[in-house]
Image 1 (cartoon, rainbow, N blue to C red):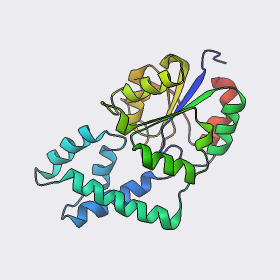
Image 2: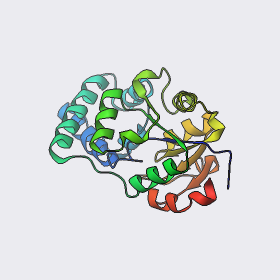
Image 3: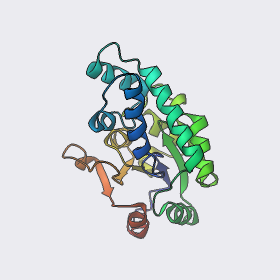
Length: 220
C-alpha cells in the first residue's frame, strides 16, 4: 500500500472513453477528403500530441500543402456528427473505478489534449463529469503532451504534488507527459502496447480499468 498517493489524474480519449478508434477513423477520412492518404501509423503517431507538435509532424510527412487546421476541423465535424447519432462508449470498468477511488477519498482530475467544450460534452454524455474535482484541457495549456505541463497543472489544481498522483494513460505521448511531470504513470493500453522506451516509465500496466480497479488495495 502506498499511503502517499492522494490523487488520480485521468486522460480521457482511449482511457476513459472508447474514442481513439473514432479519431483513427475520422482523421483518415478527413485527410482523404483533402486528398491525403493518412495511414493508421500516421494517426497513432499524433495520439495525445498537442497541435503545436502534431502540425509540423504531419507537414513533415505530407508536405507543406497539408493544411493541418482544415483537416483537423473536418475530422472534428465528422466525429461530432457520428457521436451525436451514436453516442459515446465508456471503457470497461470506468464507473467502478471512479466510484472506488471516490470512496477512498482520492482526489480526481482530468488531463486531456481535447479542448474544454468537447471534453465537458463527452464527460456529460458519459455521465462521469461529477466525479472530477478538476478538468484540465489542452486549450488552456501552452505546452501540451508529451510535455509535462498538463499533469503539473492538474496536480496543482488538486492541491497536490505530482508525486502524490497516479496518472492513467493509454498512449505513449501521454505516459511521457505524466512521467516527466513526476506522476506515477499507469498505462491501460488501447491501440498500442508499451514499447521498450515506455516500459521503464511505468508504475503499472493493466489490460483494463477493471483490472486496475481490482488492484487498488495494492496500489494505494
